[in-house]
Image (tube, rainbow, N blue to C red; front, side, top):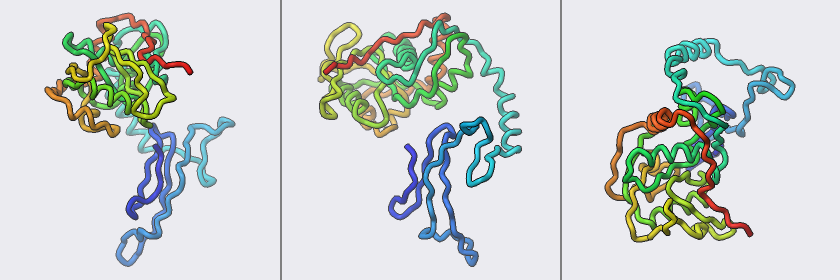
Length: 276
């Protein structure tokens, strides 16, 4: 989330992701010792950046046109040329667009978690963080470059054992926190969003239709980001038999798509929302 304020007196700024905004910090330097005078630092609000203004013109800030540095443009072009052969590797074909920004019915979330669960038949279910997924997959040829946009982070697949009670706690946090609903495979969760945080999972069943048993251990596939407490999740690290496969999640999904060849989007609603 965007942020521009002081924490314990220290100026701290954070912008929106993907370069869609920036924050300006005005610094005053004491020329006698070349040090910033912290008390005089002024933090401006987040400013959204659009490549074109509403009329199609060049974007401006403080009355000046915003233009990329020629040196940066040149370096970026050189870098893209070195990875062009990877971007164009064909993995498969999507028969329709796979959306990712539908937390309770994400076709991309379903694809990724299904691929994780397919790694080993002993894995009962897969759980990943919603905001770890960064792009849709359009209809047509799926190349490696697109998959890199979907999963840009170098997270590896981790397996572990969690109790039913721990799994429920993880799902409840996803339903009550700004970081978003956990993407799942191997589960059907009935949800009542009108209830208080921590009490929104009305029923949790596995893919066979059996209720999740709070005291039973289940083998779960997730990623190293969550194991390390990413997005504030602490329960994953409390699991047992934690094993980092060292396999990039992106590569696992790529292999899964290649084996499928023709990808039919699954918009299966794994969260069943209770109507009022």
